[in-house]
Amino acid sequence: AQRVTQPEKLLSVFKGAPVELKCNYSYSGSPELFWYVQYSRQRLQLLLRHISRESIKGFTADLNKGETSFHLKKPFAQEEDSAMYYCALRPGTYKYIFGTGTRLKVLA
Amino acid sequence: DAGVIQSPRHEVTEMGQEVTLRCKPISGHDYLFWYRQTMMRGLELLIYFNNNVPIDDSGMPEDRFSAKMPNASFSTLKIQPSEPRDSAVYFCASSPSASGGTQYFGPGTRLTVL
Image 1 (tube, rainbow over the protein chains, first blue to last red):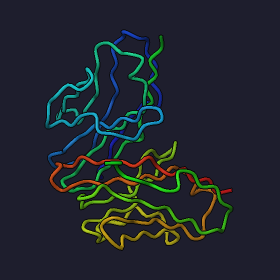
Image 2 (tube, rainbow over the protein chains, first blue to last red):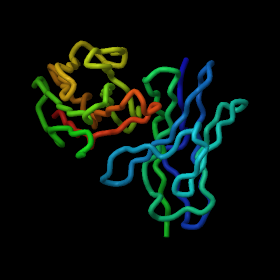
Image 3 (cartoon, rainbow over the protein chains, first blue to last red):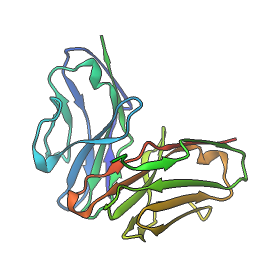
Image 4 (spheres, one colour):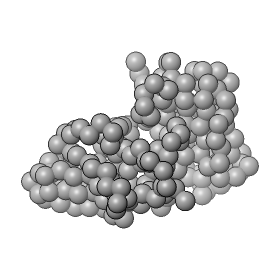
């Protein structure tokens, strides 16, 4: 079955601390993986995608096919990173499968 | 470009009433998606369209839910009759086929069924 698992509903870290938002997927083919973010009072928007291998707002995510993971990381959290983060799998079609989301709170 | 437009932004209705949610996708986008967001289940895809044609409605929870896309610039999601468990935020998103999968989300409609 195709599935995306985000084990943490809420993650609280202090400003300046490292952040890792976990995402594991279940898919037998070659996955396309994304991270979407929803800041307070803003629309859900794309943060990054694995094929771009880019860093956006200091965040990176590496696809680990062996562990079927796509964890989102940032070395030093900022207060403005507080938001809802969704990991998403696109299994070869235009259809997305989203995880249940992790709310990140960065404390001052 | 105003992005994806959804109306209403908030809807409060009583159990048994019909609810219609509306979406205007970004001009030129040929894919349109309807999602439901709840605390327990996160973001669930209900249905998506390509060039106004429904492609996958396997996420529509039951026959009470229906969606239409009569033209490239308008889509509706209807719930009839509504139930309290339908209370959620409903998002519409659109995507151009050339975007490599990036979806552009609307602001959402927060539905409360009493």
